[in-house]
Image 1 (tube, one colour):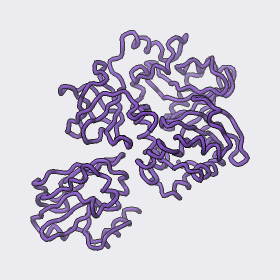
Image 2 (image 1 turned 135 degrees about the vertical axis):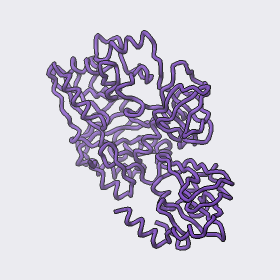
Image 3 (image 1 turned 30 degrees about the vertical axis):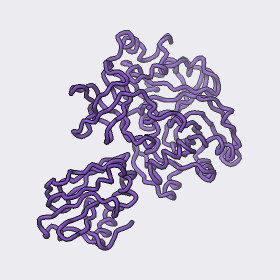
Image 4 (image 1 turned 60 degrees about the horizontal axis):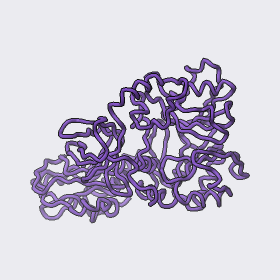
Length: 357
Length: 129
C-alpha cells in the first residue's frame, strides 16, 4: 500500500521500506539529521498509514466505556485521550488516541496501522450494544509537524495559532487550499507540535507548504529514535497482548475506578499483587548498540530483555526500553548482552534527553 | 553512485585496494548509502587470522547491523582506530578515511575472484532489478 504522499517521497529520493504492508520512507537524508532537525527546528512526517475508526450513535459512549481503559463519559468536544484496548487478561491489543467529536455520541479512534484490522474486528466482536463502528482510514491523510518551529510554520501555512490548542486537545478548521482538517496537539516525538488529519486530496499541498516554510521531511527511522529517546513505547515492540499497561508503567492511562471495562479484573489482581516485571529505560555506558531481543543481566543472571534499542542521535549513547524484573531499581547498573558482549548499562527512567535542547 | 576505477569489489559490497602484498578494505559508497547513518564500527583486532569470507568487523547503523567480510585469506595487520570515535567517516568518506582493515594476504590468487569497477557497476544494476 502507498500513502497519498508516496510520489513526494520518491521526488525527495527517500529510502523506502516495507512497514506492515506500507511502502514508507525510512529516511530522506539520514536519520540523525532528521532527528536533530525535529528536536531543534521542525520535522514533517507522513503518518497517513495510521488507522482512523469512527464510533458513533447513542450506544457509542457505553460501548467505549466498556472497551477503553479511561473515563470517556467526561470527555468534552475537542478533547483527546491516550488509552488502550485490552483483552480479557489485561493484555494490550492496541494503544490509541480517542478524539471526542461530539460528547457522548461521536468519537474517532486513531490506532496503529499494523493493528487496525485487529482493532476493528475486536471492536465489532464486542459491540453487542449496537454502536456504529466505521473504518474511515482511507478517508484520511495524516501529517505530523513536530518540533519547536512548528508554531511559526503552522501560522504561515494555515494562519493557525498553535497556542489556541492545549496539549491533548484538537480543533476543526477549514482552509480554502487544503479543505477541512482536524488539528491535534499530540505527537510521538516529545518535541511538541501537532498531528493533522485531512482529506487525502489536500495532503500533497499541505506537505509541500510545510516544507517550503522550513519543515524537514523525516522518515520512520527518525520517528522511531525520537520516540525511543522520550521512552514512548511502540506497540509490537514494547507493548503486546501479553503485556499489561501496569507492567508497561502506563497506569496513568487506566482508570481502575471505572465501574467496568474489558481487562479490568485482571489489572485489579495485578495491581493488588504487584507487577513482577516493568518496562524500563536503560542507558548503555559503553560503545555498542542495544537491540530488540538482547538479554539484560545482573550478576550474570538474566533479569530482563530489551524490546526497543538504538543509539540516541543527540547523546550518541546506546538507549533501550525493555522489561526488567521488578526487583531491579532505577540507577542500578546491569549489563546488556549485545551479540555476546556484555555492555555496562544503567537503569534510567526516560526521557534520555532533556525536554529543551 | 561512486565506484572508483582503481579499486576491486566483492558481492558483499566491500572495496579492496591492492597495496603490494596487502589489501586495504572498506565498504562501498553503495553499502554506506543503503545502511544509512553509521553509528558503530567494531573491528577484529590486529593479528587476527581470517579466511576469505570470514567477518573482519561489524558495522551498525541506527537501523541495521552488517558484517564486513574478508575479501581474501590472510592476517589483519592494521585497523582504522579513527572509526571508534568517528564512525560517521564511513558515510562521509567510504573509500578514504572510512577504510576499516588492512589484510596481509596469503595467496595472490584470491585477488582474481574480485570484481573490477565495471563488473561491480553491472552487479549493482543487476541487483537493483
